[in-house]
Structure formats: structure tokens, C-alpha cells
Image (cartoon, rainbow, N blue to C red):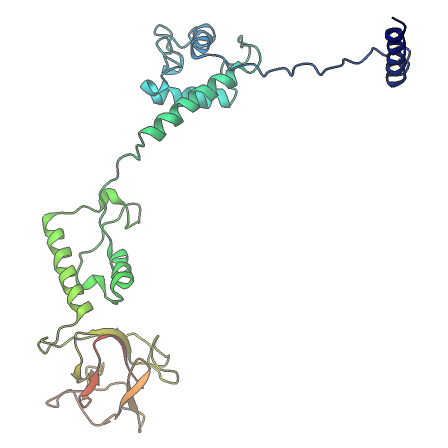
Length: 318
């Protein structure tokens, strides 16, 4: 018995030394931490239905129909059945517009919970069955067709040579509603595609043909044309797609007056520089005395020049 008492005494002394004397006016601390408080669960759809019935249907019912909206049969658990109405409700709740100022409102963040419940249901339905909506058929306009040929086939074309004029809406030529595709237009696009394909792969059996490019009579003959070599002026500069490797002849006809005069006739020693991709291929001296009454008129012609197939910048300038 004495040994037990001694042990108890020693143990009691140890406890006293560890705990120390409590401060005056301070409550003793708990030996174990209290259980953490759990966050309240969000209201159930049934509870939110009661919120709608109590705070919303007083105005948005079949009889009053305020805002042309009836929420009497609205189901919070299934907002996808009336998705458009649910979207309207969410916008009003997020903006704090409903219920309106001066009307009764539910306590706490009940309205936020209602909006979150509707958003979650709509988002989940959209994930399960995505609906991107209806896409109006749209054909390529001229600019888009040229860009597509350039990107896919590396072919430079003038879509105006193949496709009809683009219809416009509010001065825009890429509006799907006005880009109709009739049978005739479809045939035009098919013919254009066939021609572009031939340009892309080349045609060794291509028959000789002539293509004419013209400049306005009001075009300046004192300034360099875009794409022409530096140091030249006037003339013409175009991108032409050569169908096959071969020898080509270039002819130039001068813009002339009714009396037969033409630019380049006045100054002696004028020359016309013919170039392909900036590289000169012919240099022709201008005949000051040629006239429109001559058998060939005011026309000059190069010797045959070998050109590879594909698009090339052709320029003829002074």
C-alpha cells in the first residue's frame, strides 16, 4: 500500500509540474481539439422549387404573366426542359434584379444557390449532348477562293476569271445568307476547280493559246508599276500562270491617240524591258515611226522565251 501511494504521489507531482498553475481569469484549454464545423449543404432542388413558388410565382404566373414569363410549372431539378427560361432566370438572379427591390427575398445566399443549381444542370446537359446550333451553308467568295487555291495548291489565280460577282449584304461579301448556290453557280465552281487543278499539276499537252492583259489609258507612264523592276517606269506588270514548260512569245501594243501617236514615240532611244520575275529576258528598241496604219500597228514582239510552268511575274516597262 505504501509503494502504491508513493507512486501516486510522484505521479501527481509530475502532473502538477507539467501543467503549471492556471492564469487568473483564463479558462482552461481543452485537452483535445473540437470537431471542425461542417459547411452547410446546398439546398435541394425540392427546397429551391419552394423558393421559386414562394418568391417568384406571385408575379410570374399564368394570370399576371409579368415579363411574359410563367414560372408556375418550372422545375429546378430539370431546367433543360425549359432551357431558354432557365437562362433568363439565371441572368436576372446573377444581376440581382429578381426579386425586385422592395419585394421579399429569401435569407442568406439562397438566390445564389438557385442560380448555381440551374447553371450546373444546364452545363451538365450541354456536356452530355453538345448542340453547336445550325450552320448556314456558305460558299467561298472570290477572295476566299483565291486564298484557298494559294494555301492548298500554291497557285495564284484571279477568281474573277472563273466565278460570278459576289453578292453583298450591308457591303459585306462574306455573309452566308446572301451567298446562294444555284445550279448554275455550282457548275461555275466545278469548272473553276477543274481549271485550277490543271494549273496545279500542269498540262504538257496544252494547246497554244493567247492571253491579253490591258492597262487603263489613264495609267501613269512616269511611275514604276508595282512588281516591275526598279528603275523602270510605266508599262504593265501582271502575274500569269504558265500551263507548261515551253517557249513563249510576248507582244506589246501601245496605247495610241486617234492620230496614231503613242507614248515612247517622242523621245528618241526609248526601250521596252521585258522581264520575268524581275529577270530581264528581252530588251526591245521602240520604233518611233511605226503607226497604227502599219500591218502590225503599234505592236512589238519578242523572240520565243523559255519559261517554266507555274505562276510568274511578267513585266514590260520603259
